[in-house]
Length: 199
Length: 199
DNA sequence: CGTTGGCTTGACCGGACAGTCAAGTAGGTT
DNA sequence: AACCTACTTGACTGTCCGGTCAAGCCAACG
Image 1 (cartoon, rainbow over the protein chains, first blue to last red):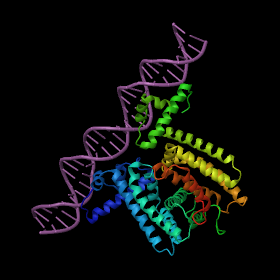
Image 2 (image 1 turned 90 degrees about the vertical axis):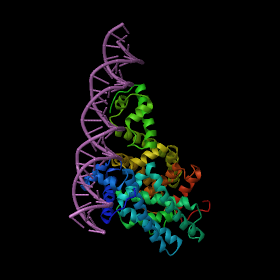
Image 3 (image 1 turned 120 degrees about the vertical axis):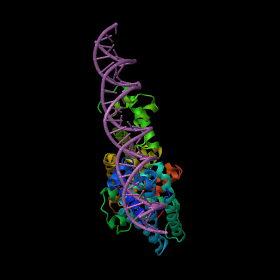
């Protein structure tokens, strides 16, 4: 869908995306109908199809936006790092903070990962983020700051810890405090065996 | 749905569950219709509703079965452990092996975690498994085999590593070899900083 | 061989849903 | 004022879906 949009049009489009994000996250993608979205906004159904080709395209657009925002945040965090290993820590912290602050986006990512219709689009973005992380890890290995290993696989391990712990925060199992993030960082850096006394 | 089932009935029920598992995993729960399941099996639609109250109940039954099987495998693995830390390693290995061997179940778990209609049922089971793991971790801390920390949170961190790496195996990003499991175990035990040379 | 009850059939129902479209509105430009 | 075009409306369509049900089938048992 490529359409010339006025200022007003852009706002309407954003409004649709924001409301749909909320509904999809709370109610699920499939169970949420297009009519539910337009009615929730008090507009006619045609409005939706003026801005989006389909419900699927809408979700794809939402996911792309969210990924862009997350990556911006990650890049900004890592760019100020004093050393590779500091970059790792900043990356983990920034990712977790963002994910905790954006529960709806996080939830949509989780859903999209289970559906091939959307997963393919996500993978590209995840790939880029993981490659970035792997580069930092490789640099840290090079600098002797961390032990040798498969940088890509380790990046994914970090991602796994991040994802699962954030999920628990959103479920209310863990409090959204810095303690959780600290614990995640400690675990990623030291594992179970060799954890610093401060943990 | 409580119904007296003959041998034949039990087989039909299992057949429905097995086929639905496959379809749900490949095509998604919502996009897969009941008619698709019964037609795929070459039976009338009424057969489905003889064995299950609804599509939802079917998925719940599948998930419960899968969880039971996984927990059996985990318990068997951990029961033969020589020490708490050996139990941790066995638990991780058994869980990953099971998840790699049951991609459809794994995928349904992932989906169910994104949908409140099913997530609640899953949590109980996950809770039990995590509590088991936390007990082993606590014992290992007690025995001085691993550093002190929040055993529950650390169990979840292990779960996060497990889940994400298995996901990659199913996506074909990683080969389903023991190397992946070895790397996961190493990461969980030593983190990034203090990894043994063998890694 | 008749009866019981587990099992199967498939047409049917009410409703919901994604997407369309002809008609209309309104803000900006000339 | 006339006009253009971005935007909006909401009834409508065709389809599909979850679930029902009256009727029939058949294996087992007495």
